[in-house]
Length: 335
Image (cartoon, rainbow, N blue to C red):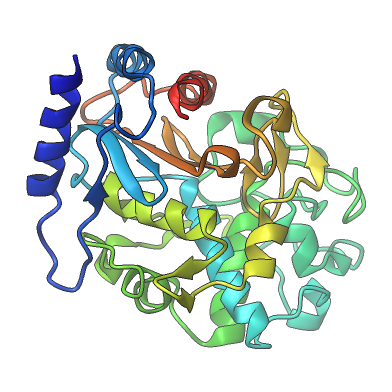
């Protein structure tokens, strides 16, 4: 069985050759690194039943295993929000965005029905925490989001958590307005290039509009191996190869739970989900997207786990709860 994982490591070396500016991942033999090979194999078998496009398992910055096509770029759906959070951390540190600014301060509104004066008292921080109290139609919403949208004015800003695409899309508008920069160009220049992403370019992002809102969504396409680099960046407190890319204080703040959610033990930070500390240890967090897109960091195990799902290959997708089960199996197998 150990030979299976040596073979996996050999495949990784070949599959990760590419962009000359990227730093190839180093690989580690699971057994020599103290992993339960049987436990890792059981996790691989479980993952196979879910039919992901790719899974990557990284510990201490080295690849323990990967399954599937780690170079295939897919729309990572709501993982986009955690990617934007990273850009916010940089912009806030540069003084370009003030989290206490209100929507009124920033002249943020929307199509009819326009925002009320009460709604415009929501701050940037409220939006980052998904606590704006603004229940306006938004781009890129699922049917469930539309059905579960509360009545306008039913909750004051800052008082009620709701996973709300209006908040997330308006944050994209605020970012572009306050920095004067395009989201995807910024991500390419400020994050993807410094951390050596092999596949991402600014062309892998697009704005998606909705006729009832002025604020577009901003979906990204990422490969699993690039998503793993982003996870490693957060696991290492925003630092990469000795350079502070994202302020460490922002990484900590964005992966701290400020709200209980409707997803069991998961909490919510600044555009990041938080994971049950009783299961995964302190500061474990998840960037999660519709259909099974996931970037998880588990600091107690020095672990990053990424899952991508191309809907062309798996129309049903993978439930977040199934990914969390896979993550539990991997954490249990890890030293």
